[in-house]
Image (cartoon, rainbow, N blue to C red; front, side):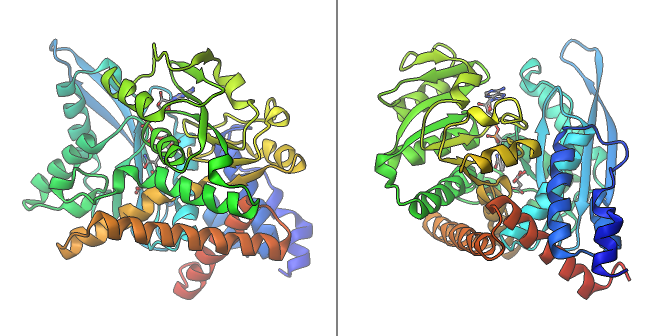
Length: 434
Ligand SMILES: NC(=O)C1=CN([C@@H]2O[C@H](COP(=O)(O)OP(=O)(O)OC[C@H]3O[C@@H](n4cnc5c(N)ncnc54)[C@H](O)[C@@H]3O)[C@@H](O)[C@H]2O)C=CC1
Ligand SMILES: O=C(O)CCC(=O)C(=O)O
């Protein structure tokens, strides 16, 4: 089919069956379709990349501390492994759904391609609120989820990492369970591990560090000095707190932060070191933090500021509130914080959006460094990790900025065009679809 015929036939526009409208997966597909059209992507390749390679759903029985058996549902979705072993975090959340995990897995494929990391894309999820579990119950849940995924995970197959509500300890249990079955230590099966178990220096801070590298590059393009910048951060976990801290260290005024307990606003700037100390000593929560006034999460997103960093969850900026966003730059620390139908409104208002698949790619970049170090059995200094991370993030930003200027498209569209071209070219060379 010729280019014109295929576009005219509208195959890019055909709705994907069984996908909820306005969901993270729908947003991902909308942007994928746009890039496919620009690239004149082969119809077969478009169809192939529209669906995950593998979807695994498991039931996870856990003996609770009181002797009852509870059963949780767990997922792992491999979107695509054409660029290399699949890679992506695991989130523990009561409302995680298979559609959400499918979107997150596809975003991992595009993200790895954007930063030229030789991995495919995957994501995992367990429907659980970890705050309702004791540490022992959490360990049993994690080990049983891992045992059910032994045929999926592997240092050459599929390599998990932390995401929302999972951390170094969870990664350590996954590594140990996998290693027991292999009868040898396999530390390269997960990344984001404790350093003593083969984790990489700098991985914990890597996602926030990458967000800030991109933000500084974007501020440079707008000729705004970081020390003249006001910043708002939604979400104060791994990504949000590190992004806030590093912007604060650049001399920026962080005027609002938030977490699940609510928002905190101080027009004169919040002492971020104090906020981090407070959260760490209050069960990772800002509840009761008195260095700022309370503000709703909705109002926080709509504050006048230079940089808005949504670093919590999907769909926070959508067609309802997009036209009220006043930031000059949105740096997407979270995956999918802006819906596809908000993209146009933000563009019309001249807001520069640094898309998730670029802005938060620092995490998977240092995960790649961790995997390389584990496989060599030779570990890098933090200075080396950070230097290489900054260089890769800066090169990726500059590269996408160039693509966006070349085609007169947004940075997000440029990121999809670049990533999908890279995956499709690899596919063509490997000839899998032939
Ligand atoms: N941890 C990592 O290396 C990476 C994480 N991400 C993405 O970044 C986002 C955050 O992940 P993490 O920081 O790892 O998770 P986390 O679990 O450490 O922190 C999440 C934060 O968001 C807050 N939050 C949750 N719901 C909220 C709401 N409705 N309003 C305001 N705050 C809310 C929580 O209270 C917490 O402060 C997720 O979208 C994740 O997929 C992306 C790339 C890598
Ligand atoms: O570090 C990784 O492997 C993946 C992190 C992740 O889940 C993400 O970038 O969304």
